[in-house]
Image (cartoon, rainbow, N blue to C red; front, side, top):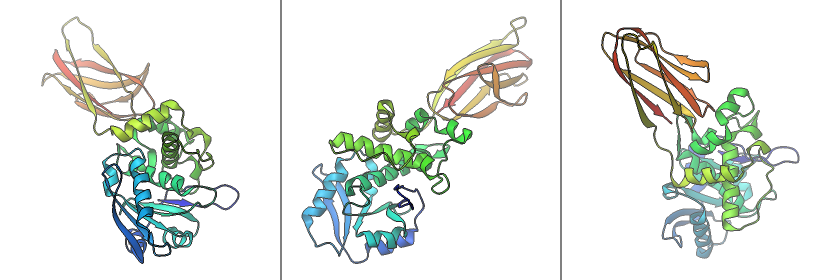
Length: 321
């Protein structure tokens, strides 16, 4: 992933895969640094270009900065390479300001201000990509869509379907890429948290500028990452003369896959459906006991069991994101 300079007046951070060979080998050539112990006691790997005079205090300052960002366990797997602007362009691309490789979990960035952005702002943005790379947002990659709670609040799924956001698109619809929007929101959160001057929101579209709730959910995604669906069970029965339908409501606060499993009498034939209001979103063939549907902006859905044949009790299990 790279921070790329766009032609024209605006600077853009483009999310793009960077060769693990380039960052794995070239980024470490002619470097000094190593493992630094941050003030928090955490160990951080930082390497500097030999174009910078060897100065352990510089490494210590950057280790403290990284450990001061809102983070989780992913910090231990990061490699930060601080190089000159010319070396950034060689390692990340001619238009690049910085880059991140999810393959080798390495940030390559300048150690000085570039294009009107502080070195710290650039690294914070790239670290946002590292956070997302180490979070789950099934069925989508968080590095492209943003983390689970943040993306659900922003409505990334619904906006992607509507063609107003473009997850993972670092070229044609670069400023509407929520992967970049998340990284920028992460930068904003940390600038406010650390009391530093907030850099201008000039990289991605204003539609992704975070309000207080978005920043709260982003912080929760960092501190308490979403990891797996939760299960809810419903039960019911069909008796003679008791009607043909049973309905249940389920809240769906997060976007993702809603999976349903129906258990009932072997000889009974029931039909399982999911509705958004009065509209059927998905329906399984009669007799099939499972159904999966993507929650995409709906915060409440109805689950319907329809009797087609037989009687008896049933249990419906919903695994929601």
